[in-house]
Length: 193
Picture 1: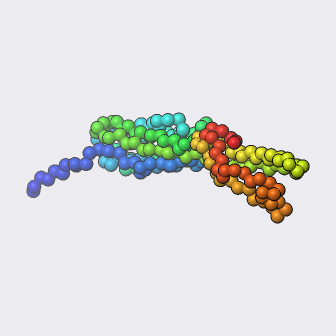
Picture 2 (picture 1 turned 30 degrees about the horizontal axis):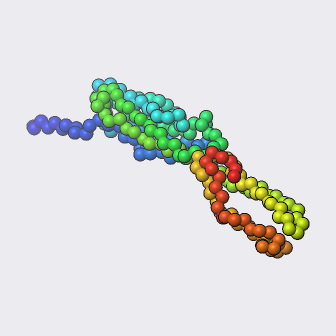
Picture 3 (picture 1 turned 90 degrees about the vertical axis):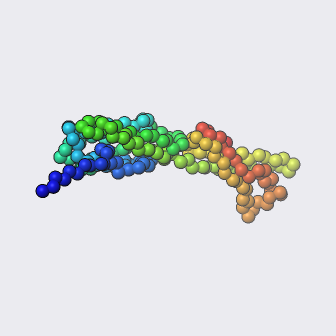
């Protein structure tokens, strides 16, 4: 008989099923799985999970793998933090979820980073308040002022086009003087212009 030995050349690592997570402020949670790529030798393996940032929370902060369950997918749930769900539109927030591995023969395993992006759910809508004025005497020009408002503030300027559309009973140049300009901008962090 010939003695044959087989050496495993696969370095111990963890397998993370997600390369990145996209969440929405105030929205549903997302899940992914973690497992080992080989049986641990010399004890249990722990994976510590940390989110860098407070805009999301984890269902657990540590996973433990043994020689009997190393191939079993372990579920991790990431949930948008309700404490940061406000009524202001902000730019998408980027977080990083780290997986630090230790124990047994996995002490030299590479830490795995999973990026998380949280989109804002507070997209503003535009409204214009209706207004009326009485027709002035000949030679007078009453002014109608319109106020455009956003349903909530946003981190960026909001610009939109506007125009005057006359009814069948009003004639431009005779009954009214049309507005000048065609674009109105509501500045960032403001609700009206």
